[in-house]
Length: 108
Figure 1: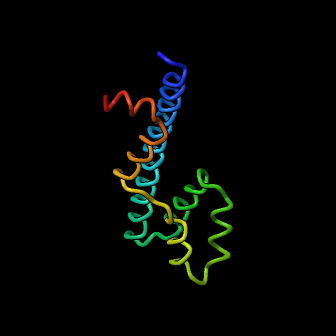
Figure 2: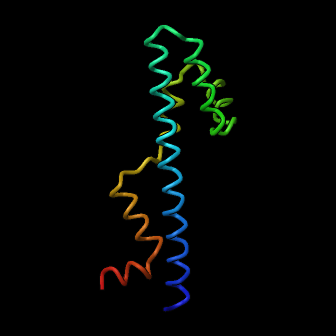
Figure 3: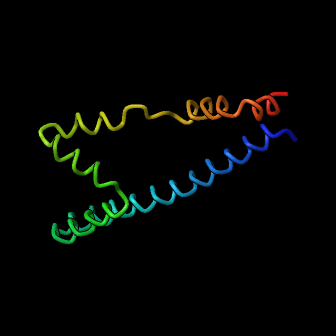
């Protein structure tokens, strides 16, 4: 096995590990949103706000500060943050380009 392939495998394994972490973070955020929605539907905005605040434990405070600066147009700020989002198909293409030696093996 070449050093290039070993390096690509190592890098790919790290990416996959991060993907697992991100999926759990997304799950946690989804659960938090469900709890917030529940308390709002129960007309308990104080508890909903407390749960919503807990989200910021995992979010870089710079995002919150930047959002506040753009409070006049939250939709535009949100859309700007979503620029560069990719589909699964696009992500797979990018991944295959990042690991050319593995792609050669895959398509051999």
